[in-house]
Length: 465
Image 1 (spheres, helix red, strand yellow):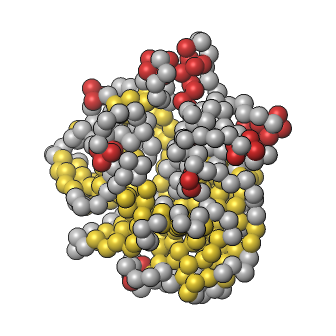
Image 2 (image 1 turned 120 degrees about the vertical axis):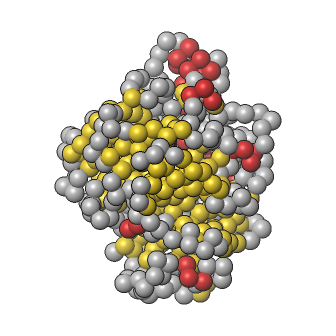
């Protein structure tokens, strides 16, 4: 079946290099290791991403189109087992049964709209994962989550939270480890454009409310604090006229304004409070928390959205740098400051049990700034001292999102390991690197050789045994 893609020549960067898909689903144990896998952690390092089985149009294929594939490394007693599995979406099953593509890519939607037809997308589950209520979910922001079993990575089906989920599910829900609740949302192309839900500890959406915003926007991420949920309403808007004339899915619309909405956890459209910020965009949130009357919000901020067409634009305008805003819930004052002006980064992550509460350390993937930026290292930010440490992988190596895996009974916030996949362009091979977070700039404590190439993906997760 791989001939469906491999036999087609293309210059599309989303289908070449380490973005080229793999087709073999394998399980491999007794992996070669340089160094030693720590015996004090046990669990699943997981990374999901787009891996197209069929490509409808190689020239217009977008990286968001690919079928979901999860790559997992299960660590136990100093050993590792690697697995990779397609997410068995109904759309992928249909295409494999027919032996050809059925669902258009997002850059083909305009063709359908121009003919007066509404395109039907595929729920790929290719973007991110979350662990809630003892269940792993794989998600994309336009569909329902998939339940995934561990450690075998089998797809158990779409999950609507016992029929209580009534809207598309974001790729980036947030779990409050203290309350056990999960906050999620979905955005749409018709008013009121935003729907927000709280999933309780029994796995049901116990609170759902619509929130009105002026336009249909791409709202990729959100944040939580102990008492609030935070939504960014920014200028990356859906441009249907542009799509019908052959343009992209979204456009940059400064007239939409830039504002951050803060709503009480079980609040609604009458209790949300909006704060204007400078013209900017953010794809991914690092964290948020409360300090007195202020809500502190940290994210990777860029000057422009990173996926709209902008020929001739400086690529750095679309790359993020870690940034902080403070919103005073009493006075309405907003303070904005750059945390880092030196490095460009994205995929910020923290220790998961601190989501919504003050954290000291943030980890993020560092960009190598080129015409086609790639991640070439991982960074560790210290909110207390302002120190920035960089773990470099090498000139010919490319990484992605890293996660933090705490040791059992940690003695400090950074008592654990930072784990990620690393691709070597020279050898066209992949490894799983385990970095001691307390000795961040040192060589990895373990480099696990993966028996097949792991294509670049989107988001990672850690689920302890």
